[in-house]
Length: 196
Image (cartoon, rainbow, N blue to C red; front, side, top):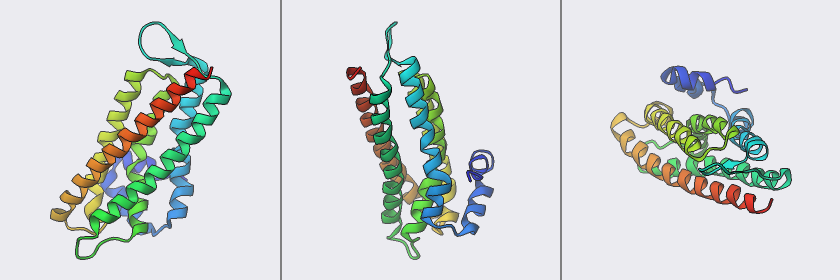
Protein backbone atom coordinates (compact mmCIF):
# COMPACT_ATOMS: atom_id res chain seq x y z
CA UNK A 1 0.00 0.00 0.00
CA UNK A 2 1.45 3.35 -1.10
CA UNK A 3 4.84 1.73 -1.67
CA UNK A 4 5.35 3.66 -4.91
CA UNK A 5 4.95 7.15 -3.42
CA UNK A 6 8.54 7.52 -2.25
CA UNK A 7 9.91 5.94 -5.41
CA UNK A 8 7.97 8.30 -7.67
CA UNK A 9 9.30 11.27 -5.71
CA UNK A 10 12.91 10.09 -5.21
CA UNK A 11 13.75 7.99 -8.28
CA UNK A 12 10.88 8.16 -10.78
CA UNK A 13 12.58 6.44 -13.75
CA UNK A 14 13.32 3.34 -11.72
CA UNK A 15 9.87 3.43 -10.12
CA UNK A 16 8.09 3.59 -13.50
CA UNK A 17 9.95 0.42 -14.52
CA UNK A 18 8.90 -1.26 -11.28
CA UNK A 19 5.24 -0.23 -11.64
CA UNK A 20 5.29 -1.39 -15.28
CA UNK A 21 6.43 -4.85 -14.23
CA UNK A 22 3.69 -5.32 -11.63
CA UNK A 23 0.73 -5.71 -14.00
CA UNK A 24 -1.76 -4.51 -11.40
CA UNK A 25 -5.42 -3.91 -12.18
CA UNK A 26 -7.20 -0.55 -12.10
CA UNK A 27 -9.11 -1.69 -9.02
CA UNK A 28 -5.89 -2.63 -7.21
CA UNK A 29 -4.28 0.70 -8.10
CA UNK A 30 -7.32 2.63 -6.89
CA UNK A 31 -7.53 0.62 -3.65
CA UNK A 32 -3.80 0.76 -2.87
CA UNK A 33 -3.02 4.24 -4.11
CA UNK A 34 -5.68 6.66 -5.39
CA UNK A 35 -8.37 6.16 -2.74
CA UNK A 36 -5.81 6.68 0.01
CA UNK A 37 -3.92 9.61 -1.54
CA UNK A 38 -7.13 11.35 -2.62
CA UNK A 39 -8.07 11.43 1.07
CA UNK A 40 -4.98 13.55 1.90
CA UNK A 41 -6.22 16.89 0.49
CA UNK A 42 -9.80 16.12 1.55
CA UNK A 43 -8.98 15.34 5.19
CA UNK A 44 -6.50 18.22 5.40
CA UNK A 45 -9.04 20.66 3.93
CA UNK A 46 -11.70 19.38 6.35
CA UNK A 47 -9.40 19.87 9.34
CA UNK A 48 -8.08 23.20 8.11
CA UNK A 49 -11.43 24.74 7.26
CA UNK A 50 -13.14 23.62 10.47
CA UNK A 51 -10.34 24.49 12.89
CA UNK A 52 -8.41 27.34 11.28
CA UNK A 53 -10.91 28.57 8.69
CA UNK A 54 -10.44 29.97 5.22
CA UNK A 55 -8.08 32.88 5.01
CA UNK A 56 -8.67 34.95 1.87
CA UNK A 57 -6.43 37.83 2.89
CA UNK A 58 -6.72 40.47 5.54
CA UNK A 59 -7.23 39.45 9.15
CA UNK A 60 -10.54 37.63 8.86
CA UNK A 61 -10.70 33.83 9.03
CA UNK A 62 -13.91 32.05 8.12
CA UNK A 63 -14.26 28.56 9.61
CA UNK A 64 -16.79 26.04 8.30
CA UNK A 65 -19.10 23.95 10.42
CA UNK A 66 -18.27 20.26 10.59
CA UNK A 67 -21.49 19.37 8.75
CA UNK A 68 -20.94 21.71 5.80
CA UNK A 69 -17.24 20.79 5.61
CA UNK A 70 -18.11 17.08 5.59
CA UNK A 71 -20.60 17.51 2.75
CA UNK A 72 -18.04 19.44 0.74
CA UNK A 73 -15.33 16.91 1.57
CA UNK A 74 -17.37 14.07 0.10
CA UNK A 75 -17.92 15.99 -3.15
CA UNK A 76 -14.23 16.96 -3.26
CA UNK A 77 -13.15 13.33 -2.74
CA UNK A 78 -15.42 12.04 -5.49
CA UNK A 79 -14.21 14.79 -7.84
CA UNK A 80 -10.56 13.80 -7.31
CA UNK A 81 -11.31 10.12 -7.91
CA UNK A 82 -13.28 10.99 -11.04
CA UNK A 83 -10.53 13.31 -12.31
CA UNK A 84 -8.00 10.46 -12.20
CA UNK A 85 -10.28 8.27 -14.32
CA UNK A 86 -10.97 11.14 -16.70
CA UNK A 87 -7.26 11.81 -17.18
CA UNK A 88 -6.67 8.10 -17.80
CA UNK A 89 -9.29 8.24 -20.54
CA UNK A 90 -7.65 11.39 -22.00
CA UNK A 91 -4.28 9.64 -22.10
CA UNK A 92 -5.91 6.63 -23.75
CA UNK A 93 -7.51 8.80 -26.44
CA UNK A 94 -4.26 10.70 -27.07
CA UNK A 95 -2.25 7.49 -27.44
CA UNK A 96 -4.74 5.72 -29.73
CA UNK A 97 -3.25 7.24 -32.85
CA UNK A 98 0.06 5.38 -32.48
CA UNK A 99 1.11 2.01 -33.78
CA UNK A 100 0.79 0.05 -30.55
CA UNK A 101 -1.39 2.16 -28.26
CA UNK A 102 -1.73 1.19 -24.60
CA UNK A 103 -5.05 -0.09 -23.29
CA UNK A 104 -7.41 1.98 -21.17
CA UNK A 105 -6.39 0.00 -18.07
CA UNK A 106 -2.72 0.95 -18.40
CA UNK A 107 -3.65 4.59 -19.07
CA UNK A 108 -5.81 4.90 -15.95
CA UNK A 109 -3.12 3.27 -13.82
CA UNK A 110 -0.59 5.69 -15.29
CA UNK A 111 -2.83 8.68 -14.53
CA UNK A 112 -3.28 7.51 -10.94
CA UNK A 113 0.45 7.47 -10.33
CA UNK A 114 1.10 10.72 -12.23
CA UNK A 115 -1.38 12.49 -9.91
CA UNK A 116 0.59 11.51 -6.77
CA UNK A 117 2.43 14.85 -6.26
CA UNK A 118 -0.73 16.89 -6.79
CA UNK A 119 -2.61 14.87 -4.18
CA UNK A 120 0.31 15.09 -1.74
CA UNK A 121 0.38 18.87 -2.19
CA UNK A 122 -3.03 18.89 -0.52
CA UNK A 123 -1.30 18.60 2.86
CA UNK A 124 -1.03 22.39 2.93
CA UNK A 125 -4.82 22.62 3.19
CA UNK A 126 -4.30 22.05 6.92
CA UNK A 127 -3.69 25.79 6.93
CA UNK A 128 -6.10 26.98 4.21
CA UNK A 129 -4.37 30.13 3.08
CA UNK A 130 -5.23 30.68 -0.59
CA UNK A 131 -1.77 31.68 -1.85
CA UNK A 132 -0.10 28.82 0.07
CA UNK A 133 -2.53 26.26 -1.38
CA UNK A 134 -1.94 27.63 -4.89
CA UNK A 135 1.84 27.54 -4.47
CA UNK A 136 1.77 23.94 -3.26
CA UNK A 137 -0.59 23.03 -6.11
CA UNK A 138 1.75 24.56 -8.69
CA UNK A 139 4.73 22.66 -7.25
CA UNK A 140 2.71 19.42 -7.28
CA UNK A 141 1.60 20.12 -10.85
CA UNK A 142 5.17 20.71 -12.01
CA UNK A 143 6.36 17.46 -10.47
CA UNK A 144 3.38 15.61 -11.97
CA UNK A 145 4.36 17.03 -15.37
CA UNK A 146 7.88 15.68 -14.83
CA UNK A 147 6.45 12.23 -13.97
CA UNK A 148 4.28 12.41 -17.07
CA UNK A 149 7.19 13.21 -19.40
CA UNK A 150 9.36 10.51 -17.82
CA UNK A 151 6.69 7.84 -17.78
CA UNK A 152 4.95 8.08 -21.14
CA UNK A 153 7.68 6.45 -23.28
CA UNK A 154 8.37 3.44 -21.07
CA UNK A 155 5.14 2.88 -19.19
CA UNK A 156 2.80 3.38 -22.15
CA UNK A 157 5.15 1.79 -24.73
CA UNK A 158 5.18 4.86 -26.95
CA UNK A 159 8.39 5.89 -28.69
CA UNK A 160 10.23 8.85 -27.25
CA UNK A 161 9.46 10.99 -30.29
CA UNK A 162 5.74 10.22 -30.15
CA UNK A 163 5.66 10.58 -26.39
CA UNK A 164 6.35 14.31 -26.50
CA UNK A 165 3.06 14.89 -28.32
CA UNK A 166 1.08 12.65 -25.96
CA UNK A 167 2.74 14.18 -22.89
CA UNK A 168 2.23 17.76 -24.02
CA UNK A 169 -1.43 17.35 -24.93
CA UNK A 170 -2.14 15.31 -21.82
CA UNK A 171 -0.45 17.92 -19.66
CA UNK A 172 -2.44 20.74 -21.28
CA UNK A 173 -5.74 18.91 -20.79
CA UNK A 174 -4.66 17.89 -17.29
CA UNK A 175 -4.05 21.52 -16.38
CA UNK A 176 -7.54 22.38 -17.62
CA UNK A 177 -9.05 19.53 -15.58
CA UNK A 178 -7.04 20.59 -12.53
CA UNK A 179 -8.09 24.22 -12.96
CA UNK A 180 -11.72 23.16 -13.22
CA UNK A 181 -11.33 20.96 -10.15
CA UNK A 182 -9.67 23.79 -8.22
CA UNK A 183 -12.34 26.28 -9.31
CA UNK A 184 -15.13 23.94 -8.24
CA UNK A 185 -13.29 23.23 -5.00
CA UNK A 186 -12.81 26.90 -4.16
CA UNK A 187 -16.42 27.62 -5.05
CA UNK A 188 -17.72 24.73 -2.99
CA UNK A 189 -15.47 25.32 0.01
CA UNK A 190 -16.11 29.07 -0.30
CA UNK A 191 -19.84 28.40 -0.53
CA UNK A 192 -19.50 26.37 2.64
CA UNK A 193 -18.41 29.53 4.43
CA UNK A 194 -21.88 30.96 3.76
CA UNK A 195 -23.49 27.90 5.33
CA UNK A 196 -21.93 28.66 8.72
